[in-house]
Length: 271
Image (cartoon, rainbow, N blue to C red):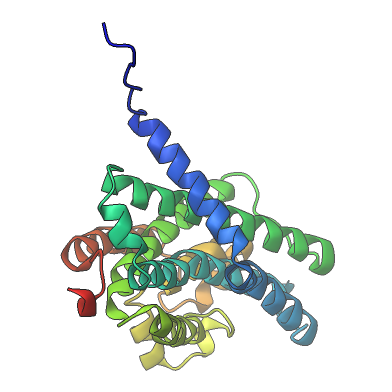
């Protein structure tokens, strides 16, 4: 019997848990990421809520309408933008190449990213709802509307996370990632009914927005924050929750396929 014994390898669950903790610590240590991902939606809610204080009809204020859009935008920032920029940066500085060469299962890296997205998304939603209720008197969803809120948030975050992982491969390096992703995200917000009433956006822009997940997330959230009477102002005259689920689910599948086809562990220049 040897004097030394080999330490058993950690379980897969332990590796996943550790990687999730690492991702959360890294995120909250980066002040720019915290400000941009968590505080920017809050600042937008405060500014738009203070400036655009008018009634849309049926006793609904613009802030009540805006809450649906800003939560959807917050999820987009915590998932698509956050993933695309952070992964491109880690690919550029050699972190991904190093992790790929360790015994850690590659799946643990993605599990850690998902944990980060879920935690940041939940924090963003809680903060936005709290500010909306305390300072602007937002009416929260009730009863079964919370179930709709939950599945829209989960499907939307999943679709945007997978899309963000795929988009990360478009950036040439970490320095160009923000310049590549941020304009795309801002454009989606402007045409998807985040900053403006969706029915007031030109029809051709509505058509473009309907291709991407953000428009459908915002529409799904509007169904739980707004009275059914305002569904008539939607392009189809209803909330189309079935189509919301279908499109977001389709983007989850498409995003997964794009990830498998495009994801790289190192920059093109280093190959």
